[in-house]
Image 1 (cartoon, rainbow over the protein chains, first blue to last red):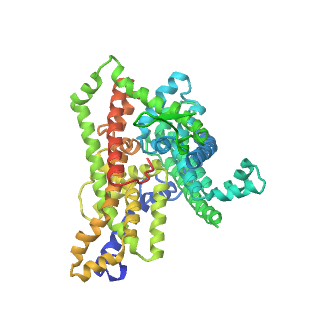
Image 2: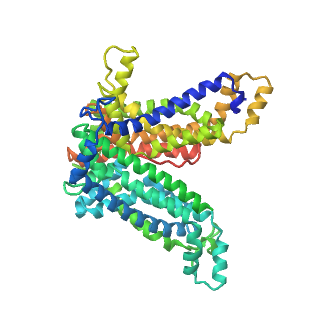
Image 3: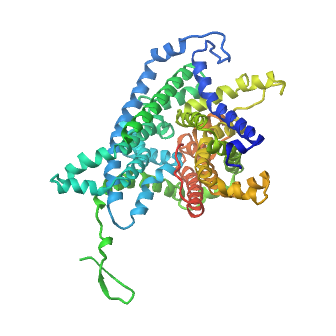
Length: 266
Length: 290
């Protein structure tokens, strides 16, 4: 009846209409921004009076945009590496270990995910001002690592939980050292978890704006902070161009994730 | 050897399972989290009762001022509205996704994921442009003859509600989809066989069965909305602040750490108690996003 699509009667068309409208609503801003970035109107008139690449050339001509993108990339890459390494070691401890308060500890590690970011941003801002890390690359990396680590621990430990440890033990019995068995048997088996951890960590850092607003200095800012600062002044179409490139990157990453997951799961 | 006393006072060896193994692995992360997460947040909260003078003065000021109370009201009203609207739209969509033919479902899923993964600032920027006085939405409404003059859709709480609902929709659709997908269709067939009409099937069977998912999703969206910073500041304008912006303002422009800490504590207590409610009554759901 209600859970059989063909037997819903006219309710079927009602559900379909709501779903299609919602999908259009979700798609609208994304398509709109992409169209706008090629529109020739400085005042973002839509539909645009003509088409142009002007905003892209302005974007690439301004060294501050490129610089902030490069800063974002550097930070995100360092955060990704550290987050996967730390997440891996921690997940081994959490999944394989047995000690008091293990579940409580896991919950603690995941807390930064649910905490309002603004609280963390303000708290770290105060701390880093005091110890001289405010406005530095190290400060950025540390604060983004706090946010990325929970995603990494979550993906790697769930992969590790799904891996049968006796396979690793078998490798040790066959003469591999425990470390060798971990590197050559276990790591390849949980590679899909490591990959998810890397993607989530990268995106967490790359897209993060709240903490970044507090960490940035006039000489060091990430791409989201640059977008934020520009938006607070005016709604220039250059931001549309930057946003479109970000959306493109998202689509590429999504496709990559879909492909790699398929390959790794086989 | 490690030991512990039982109720009778006899000394017994510690059960083997209790002995710590693998604890070394979590030490680096624990140290990191303690230094760069727990300690800074704890210090911030402590400053609310220590600065400028020890006591609860900051909290009295926070509760006593009409300006701050309005910000609390804004925060709760917007979060509540966003939750209700997301639920009203999200339920039929999740329901449709759970039973629709496969190909259409995967298209809708791709759109959901794309919108979720797209940079938050890019999405918010799009709404800033779409909702402005000369924006596409106003033009369309005028074009359809629904309104004569452009509506003020941005720089107010309407804009914040639209922008936040946009962001939160996937967070309610995805968990609800999971719950509805798991419902056995024969339950509804049985209800129909026993003479229930469609409306009764919906209100007495499907909705109650989907309730845990709805409660979990709604609570998560509500809590996430309470702490949102970027979207309210860009779409709400300076006159319509929400709690997260207030915290940022205390710290950044007013350099008032005592008040900042107090507002942060309020947000933190509300957030964590709602999560506790969720864990206690609806079970665990993985949140995400900002």
